Length: 105
Image 1: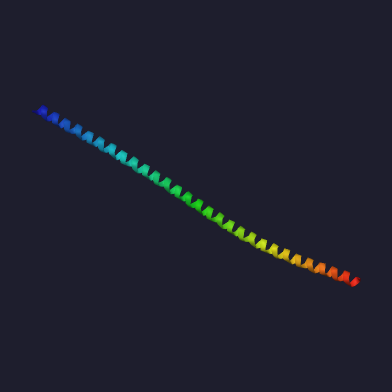
Image 2 (image 1 turned 90 degrees about the vertical axis):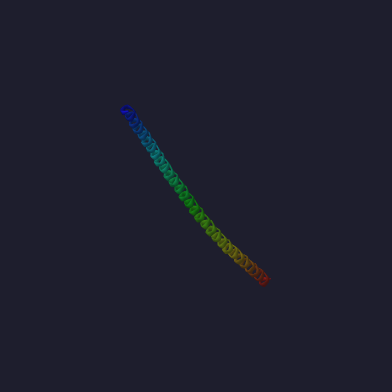
């Protein structure tokens, strides 16, 4: 009877060790999964941050293009006004030359 009792006790100890080993393996797996999840979350945050920086850069570039276009349109309007003024002066100059030639005849 004592041998059977010892055998049962030994079996209980072995089963307890197996359960403990299984629990330890599960804990390790859970910790590894948690680390993997944290790494994945960090990578996702980094990608989102990079995307946000890209969007900010693109928005800033768009704003610069809009400003440059407005400046170019303003410069064009000023050049057209100056050209119109030069044409008007040219017409006045030609008229003055015609008047001088007419007066000298």
